Amino acid sequence: MTTNQKPTYTGDIAEQQIDPTKEYSSENQELIFSAEQHAIWADLFSGINQTYLLEHLCQEFKNGLALLDLDPHHIPTVSHLNNRITQRTGWRIERTVVRYTHADDWYKKFAQRIFLITDYLRSRDQMEFTPEPDMFHDIFGHLPYLTMEFYARIEDKFAPAYMKATQDEREVIKRLAWYSTEFGLVIEDNQFKIFGAGIISGRAELANTVMEFYRLSRDNVINYTANVFEQLTDLFQAHKSDVHRIIDGVNDLHQRGQMSSQDEGWNVVHSLYQSLGITRDGYFAGEVILAPFDIETIARIPKTVYAFNPMFFVCESFQQMDALLDSYLKPIALRN
Ligand SMILES: [Fe+2]
Image (cartoon, rainbow, N blue to C red):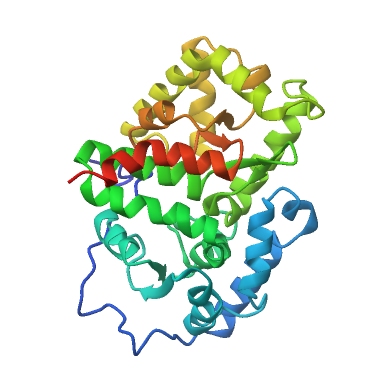
């Protein structure tokens, strides 16, 4: 390897094992943040807390944000979060030194209704996007929902199934969590609304997603005065084999380390369409493909591409999300 050759970075985040000697205890959950860290928090908060963006987030997020009562200018204490959350849903927040927990450790905590938040906050040069989930993602993206029973119920589904799943099933379970609680969309008032914490806490992903809502109408792909979910289902069914070819192609690029950033991701995917002979118009003309939450398709995405998401999945309602997740997770959780 020559010195100026960059190491291959596949967009994966290195998983860390928890070193028990460095982990926070119940006595030292509260950290002291610098003025600059509070300022970064305030800028991230106000960057998303804008009417023109909030109108595209699901109502549950906005209800939960009000219940969580975050200070726009200061990083909250763990005790503030637990005061707002535990009495409502029984979930508890714990601080962790681990930036990206090994899924097995994460789900062990989940099974005890403990939601881990990292002690890491992104730096100024990652305001639009951070591949590693930071404390703004954990707190602003996820915790509003943990004030509400419906979300606690959804989060409660994953750990019992994960504990009993085979290795292959565990990969699917991670994908299902990724494309629901992290990057899921839901229909409300016959409109696409953003649900997932990963989209909500990253302005770049958020802006791309909102742009796709407008593009679908602008290009006459979806008519927002007719049933939106039905139209999306019809489009997906008509293009399913091409969607699967794109997913397989993206996976292949990912394995070869060509999806190392959002910019790189968009660029190589453009040429992937070309090589597959798929014209970028209509359903496929946007920066991200929207599809109904389809477990078979989600399971086909064998690796989570952290720097770049080629598609997002939409549920018709939270009841449907509940039922679809149950259809996969419950039989596994009920095994002896
Ligand atoms: Fe997350």
